[in-house]
Image (spheres, rainbow, N blue to C red):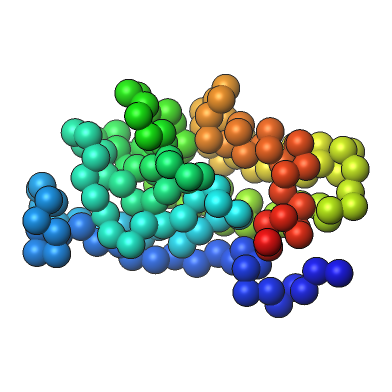
Length: 166
């Protein structure tokens, strides 16, 4: 039986993250503050402690998985993902507000299923998350993209409540 008061239970919260030359000599450009979700479900996304400049107009505000970065493109306003050693970014959401809405909705959809569930429950949860993404930001659900990867992992049974809570 899962403890619904578990400290690892995903809950939606926003945090402010700052980027400033006063606190970071490597910061290039004007001071910046972003308000972003603290985390999502599992290791899919975590906010960084501080903003860091990426390549060009990219500002890193979070991480995904073991080595991925979640960034804001300050020119287009899009949220993008960059894998370590990758040479291009892929879209996560068309805007930071859309990213916030989708993250909140995915957290609110949790729990997806328990460890004793079958593939029909996995599929139902995966389709529900896909509908969330497509309903908020249709262009964000791309082949091999951030959200499609999450949906595929849910569909394979990798996101049982017990697995997420660890």
